[in-house]
Image 1 (cartoon, one colour):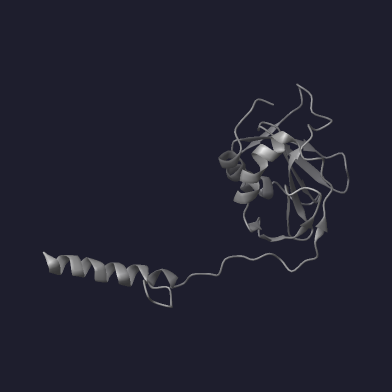
Image 2: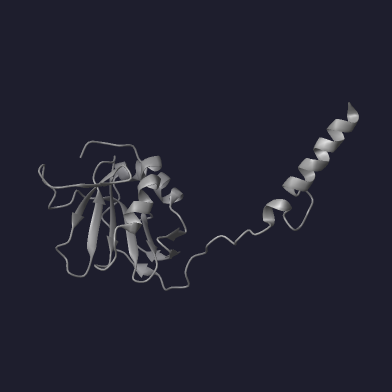
Length: 167
């Protein structure tokens, strides 16, 4: 009975790489995790933090990827801890924003990966996507030549971090 237990332990040590500086079998072919881009901090305008944002947004911010649509994350400069950005031109996410001014009961929404987005294209310098079916609104601003890849990738993250609420 002792021999099978020893064999199992030896296999686990080899597979998990316990005591092995190389990381064991799991390290073979492993790519390093993405890091923040070496870009200057991006100034981001944010609304005042509400109690709702304080309750909901930390979970979303903690779950955000270091890379989004092929763009590495970058530092932001804002009055809120609930702003995040990637790449250049920047993809900017702000959690806990106000209801979009143009959102009406009859406004068309685009559902991507289970998230309902209100899309504002009135500014020629950017496109603003706002998730309007969560406990707090989440705004993603992209350059006008950026497609829906960032919000497509953020859909599962938003679904996991923020509860659904009727818009």
